[in-house]
Length: 199
Image 1 (spheres, helix red, strand yellow):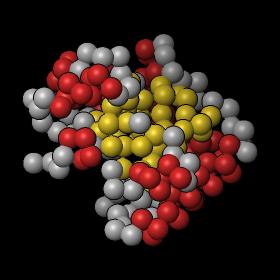
Image 2: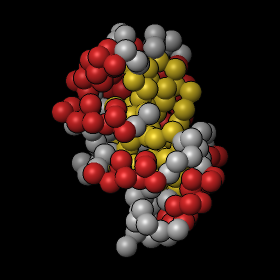
Image 3: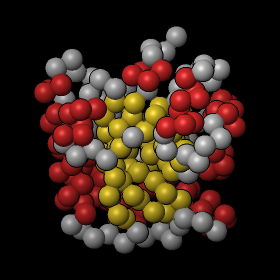
Image 4: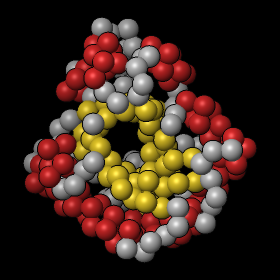
């Protein structure tokens, strides 16, 4: 399970996070380092949200895994920084399942080509797919999006692309994670259910 930490870092409930979770999601921001300093437990930090290429070095100073790889250009920049550090960069490809203009992520029909390019890079390791489908009150209406990501995962794994091991499916949040898990999610993003609504 992943906890999304987009909340007031002074709240006592942050102690619960340090005690119980193993993966924490955060957007790149000035608060990210403060939150890392606050949570001393051995957790993995995953970055979500669009990553600009000129912010790659900053992001890799803060995060263990990038969940928002969405272009060949970004993959090359991650590879360049990985070479400089002498360590492969771990990443998930973010897929824009519904083609929503308000969301980042690569179009589903371009994912295979991105993986082929990323797989040829020496310092990038793609470990999964991530997606945030459209919000639906009726969870059965969001199920097809989760299912399509799982099916995409299977199709892409069959290609056996070097340096690509799509073992993780990061999908599902507080309101729809039960359906996401039913459809194969290995990582779910829980925030509101733990911390309450954002203020």
